[in-house]
Length: 342
Image 1 (cartoon, rainbow, N blue to C red):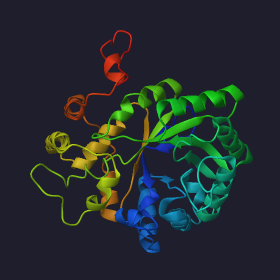
Image 2: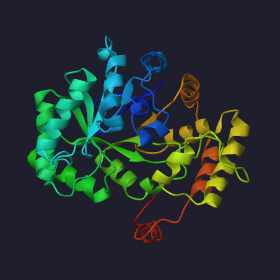
Image 3: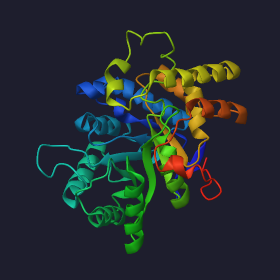
Image 4: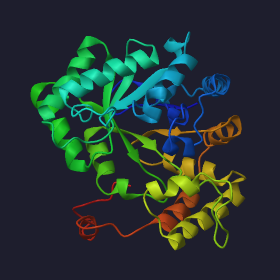
């Protein structure tokens, strides 16, 4: 397994990490992911990950209302020193007025709850799951900085921020000498390239690593969707696709056609091609992959240890290219002063 430095930190992370959102179950949304609370199956998946060098496990307090953290924590008993754990807070977990957001009150409650459920006294990477526009950024960054100094958190990161959210947070941290975000967990895929417009250039400039969630475009790039064919009768796409970003059918099929062509050249599967493409993009430190079973996990593991050629990358780039929104399309008209970052 290849390891990469995470952003401006000294922490090395595997290029594939495991998303434990599939652990726990408990409500319709996470059940649609194929979530499981079966201890034997979960431990087997963790065993396979560690055998392959996938040592970073990502979860969140809201995944299955905390059950994902509990199940992951039990599966990691006795081997905490072999793994990196990433978890998140900000989204609502509870009915009270302060059971949501990135206030000092809520983050304090959240980190203590996550540590208890995970059965550990620290987490390696602690993310804000989303931006909280109602809490002063100074309060947020001061709280996260305190967690690091108290030893509860090793590194801090964010997720689903816009460019200005992330840049302002970094600026506030720099102003007071507080701990900086070393990573941004973001949606990025061959059918979701908006990340490249502003967040990727920001990551390059500020040395913020990218942990990619849903690298297969909400399941659209698993190889099950093709032109002229219906969605398989048994597929989580029936329940999950409506919750994710919408993708025009013709655009999707154009990308899948290109993936099929490259897969035929390489002997790899469509999802392996899609994952390998991401691993060659700037700022990408690790792809968070999930799996409902051992077969899916092993297929995802086959995405590493080789690289697409420059020609194959170009084929996929062209098929998935889209017109950016303003002001990015305007800036691209002046490459002399706005050189492309990719």
